[in-house]
Structures are given as structure tokens and as C-alpha cells.
Amino acid sequence: MEQLTITLRPGSAPVHFFRGGAGEPVLYLHHLAGLQGWEPAIAELATKFEVFAPYHPGWGPSQGLDEVETGLDLVLHYVDFLDALGLGAVHVVGHSIGAWIAAELAAIRPDRVRRLALFTPIGIWDDAIRGEDPFAQNPLRATEVLFADPARRENLILRDGTVDPLENYVQEMKDLKAAAKFLWPIPDTGVIKRLPRIKAPTILVGASGDRVVPPAYIPIWKANIPGSEAKTVLDAGHLVNLEQPSRFATIAGSWFLRPN
Image 1 (tube, rainbow, N blue to C red):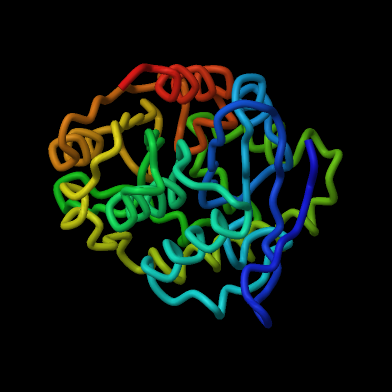
Image 2 (cartoon, one colour):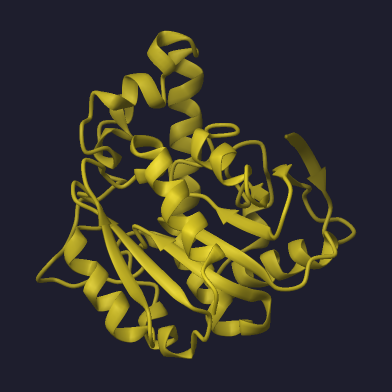
């Protein structure tokens, strides 16, 4: 695994990303809370694929939040990212806000997406289903709502006290501020209108304990993406990649290896 940076255009902020593994290329687009380093789910995927895991603009060490204003800007950002790396069509796994971006990418640039896996996708709002507001939480426990068991935040985000709590709180708030630019006050991005344009074989994955994107949203996504399939991961909340990393990697990896 390598942690790298790349500049997409003269004068633009560099993109920080992880790269590791060998095989068919996979673009991993992360969730609301950013990347927790070279996460176990990504590492497991990298045993079968070459994985590229960038920080979105404004998350983690990446700057450039002021360079993107809309979902289209984010799509073009990742088209430029793939171009800069010399990659053509890739498998894409998107998680949470990353699933929204991945779906937009597949709808707008179907030539760049081979197969698509969307985990706990955010971007559709239904008043009958609703969901917890990730931006209205206690700032000292900002990401607890993203877990089925809030106590898991201590282990998976705070790493049982091995990271500085104050630095972590600041980073959590920075990442959530970046997400709020696109998802607050209501996480309705209009993506539902573009989902029927997706041509890549798609699997949708909900989590039984997701309070931000309750599992009842998954059938709505499935009904609007032609030929898509759906699964639910048990004993996991919105951050299914952290709570069930092996299940996450197995579902995505098996999907990408399935013949068309």
C-alpha cells in the first residue's frame, strides 16, 4: 500500500489517496466520515484488485472543497482523477456520500464504470422514511449515529484511546462540514432522476442498523436502477465498512468478479 498525492489540473489542490493491491482496478469512494487510513475492508479488497481510495475534496488531508460546488463537479473531479492515473473503465464501490457520487458517475459517464457497488447510499429523501440527521449530533460524539452500536466508535474511530481525542473531534467536524455542503439540510440530491441512466451492473447494500439511511431506502434505489440487485448486512450501521469489513469486502469483491 502507498499513500500518494496527485494534482489534477494546474493550480488545483492535490488529491491525497491510497493505492494498493494488484488486479482489475477498483475506485473506492468513501463515506461521510472520510477514510480511517488503509481500512481493513479496503485491505481485503486489495487482495484481489488494485484499489484506489482517494479522499474527497475537503476530507482528511485533501483540500479543494472550494473547487467543487455540485454533484456534477464531484463527478468531473473523479473523471479527472481517473484520467490522471491513466485508468479507463473501473469497478466502483461507493459508500454513503461516496455511493451518491458513484451513482452520479455511473449515470453521467457510463463509459468509466464497469460494475458498481453502492453501500448505504445517501442522496434520496422520503418523508415517510426519513433518517437521522448526521449534522445535528453532539459535537463530542459526532459520528456515534453512524454506528449500529455507538460504543463501537471508541474502537473504530477513536481506536481505544490511541488517537488524540481533540484532534479526532476536529477532524470529524471538518469531514462532516464538507459533507454538509452537499447534503444539508435535506440529503435529497436529485440523483433519483438520473438513476435510470445507469448501465453498469449494480448491487445495492443496506445495513440493518443504519439510522441515517434506513434500509427502507434500498428498494427505492433498486426500483430506479435497471437490473440492480440488493442485499442487507446485519449488525451494522451506516459505516458498514468499519463494523463489518469482511462482509463489505466479500460483497463488493464477489460482485466485481461476477461475469456480466
